[in-house]
Amino acid sequence: MPAGWLLLLVLLIAALGYGLGRRRALVSAGGNIRVLHSLPAAYGWNVAMAVLIPSLLVLALWSFAAPRVIGAMVVPLLGAGEGEVSLLMGDVRRVAEGLVRLGVDVSTVAPEGLRERLGEVGIALGQDVSPATLAAAARYDVLAARSDWLMTVLVLAIALGAAAWTIRRTTSALRARNEVERGVLGLLVAAALVAIATTVGIVLALISNTIKFFGLYPATDFFFGTTWSPSFGGGSELGILPLVWGTLYISAISLLVAVPLGLLSAIYLSEYASPRVRAWAKPMLEVLAGIPSIVYGLFALLTVGPALLVVFGDGGLGIMQGGTAVITAGLVMGIMLIPFVSSLSDDIINAVPQAIRDGSLGLGATPSETIRQVVIPAALPGIMGAILLAASRAIGETMIVVLGAGAAARLSLNPFDAMTTITAKIVSQLTGDSDFNSPEALVAFALGMTLFVVTLALNVLALWIVRRYREQYE
Image: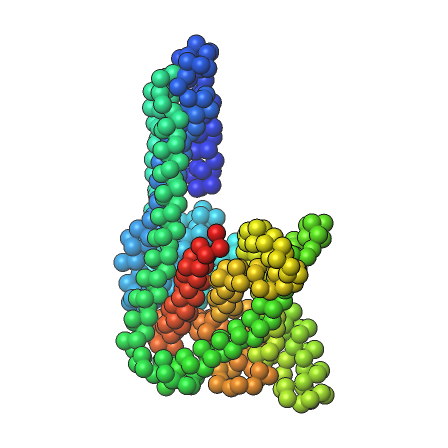
């Protein structure tokens, strides 16, 4: 049975269990709610959670592990080397999918005939698909079908068994509320552990591949090299300094745009705007944060770049050679970061106690003097934290850089030159058919690890500034 239908059945069993558990609690109390230890809904939720938690856990684990176990059982049939397994397994899965749609026995159809029939249902195969691959696909199909049935039987047995057992022990004296609260606490802990485990997994994946890269390429050449010239044919120069410079240069220009505009917008909204103006102006400003970065990239490529070229290009000052440049990406990225700075700064300025403002005004200061000399200094730690968070967002941006800044890795002070960043090169190094045993592909993980460390340091610094100086104004 498909996992989607199985999930619906489990949800249906849980819904029925909710109703039966609630009803049994009321029956055991003789219809008198006051006799119950908990509210009737708590008894229903106790049954529903007993059904859902173990069933969905088994379903998720089985769905994750089964393809890998089946793949490991099928790999020996391919007789392929380590580097070919991933490519051949792709063909195996596509053929297995086609066999399910066609309902044919692979042993009765010639490879060419099977390729044609699979093409009829939209499954494209390469010309080098061997009989061993077809046989492996047939075996994969059989094992996958058995796995689906075993998963269905096991998950339904757990769901029905949990429902029956929980309903049976439901009485008016059962502390259902306590059990539900313990179950919710367990779910919250599990969610936190999943988030932590995901972060740890990402870091370990980056570290392992970074170590593998530095085993093939000298670390000193990577960190101190001034030339970025990858070549999958060999002889690559993979110095990170041009990419770091491009990343920091574009980020600095974007902050020069975002910080003044965002901070001034926050001051206006929090100190000068009427409630009516604030009610529509702040949501309109925050719409910028919801625009996808690819849209900003297209805006940089099609609008901002050509506009700058008219002023600074050959028809104007003659100092800009093309629409893709550092200044193009920096301006558009700055526009994207305005709501980050504005929204966070607005919340921080509003958090400054009103008594501080009243005291300043009572001493004879004007509203503008109060803002400059009292409110802003009081909110400065939080504002600095907001700026650092915006900087980490700018450093990690990709699409605006790809479309607006160009792809040239160079060390230059001219903002009208095309440059590139770490994120853009991560994309380019992993695009296409890459050999993940080569330094040219593995360098993407070293770049990612470097970017991770930089953004993590900025986030930690922002949190430290906010926590260190916030108490002075509470």
